[in-house]
Length: 131
Image (tube, rainbow, N blue to C red; front, side, top):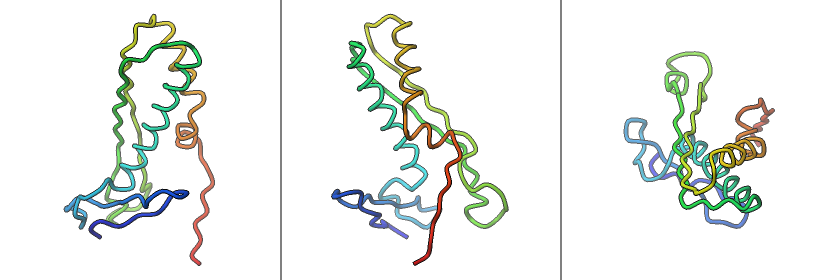
């Protein structure tokens, strides 16, 4: 499985994917569930930047730490049940001179408009076909 080339998005280079050695990989790239967390983090970061600009809020530094609870037993075929994340947590740290109330309003706006956040929070039909 080492260094699976991944898939291309629009005209960009393929996104590499790999697994840690314990799962048969070479640990050369993030695995798919790490990429999912990364997609959420990137979406939130863009949301903070865009909404802060519109609101006139200066962001000196932004950090988004993500964690997810995942039971690999189902993925590995050792148990039945839900193969995805059971929970995802994001902690946002903003360095800004703006008052706390403005940062809380910014946070609320970002959560209300994050496409990846909405997709993860709401059941979305997914159809995967074998060609």
